Image (cartoon, each protein chain N blue to C red):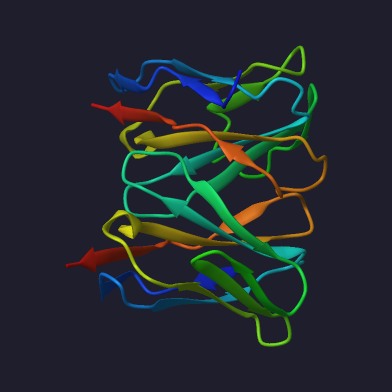
Length: 109
Length: 115
């Protein structure tokens, strides 16, 4: 079967760093996506990792280890507007995006 | 258009009614996907089009669900004889790269409530 695990909820302080972990088991794997979704809005693309290693993009970085079936999203210098759900999604071989349930991040002052 | 447009934004249907949800993708985008997102859950794949061809419909939960994209642009997801478990947000996404979700743009979704 297919499975993606990520924490349901996290809380972090404004200005801090937070790491959201994701482990996956899928039949077929092309790459790993992270999306941000504010309540009632569309998911917006954050990152896409195909190769092992760290991809840095401004305040957001994403890491992938294909051998371990593991990824994380790192958010630095947290801002209140970063409060949202963060969706980990594995691109399987059949043109599917298989999503986790999402991690709801709350940034507190 | 500038983004993926979905209509209606909200839909309330009585159990047993048929509904039609529309997705207007970014102009020129070849790939189009439909997802179902229940409250507090991640999106779940329903179906995939490349131009007008429906290449994968393995995620459609029952034969009450039907999707089409007759001219390779606008797509319609139809749900017949709606049931309460169909209540969810239905997301549409389009991409300019065939065979890949990279660069996907999602619409804001249609929130369907079946009463």
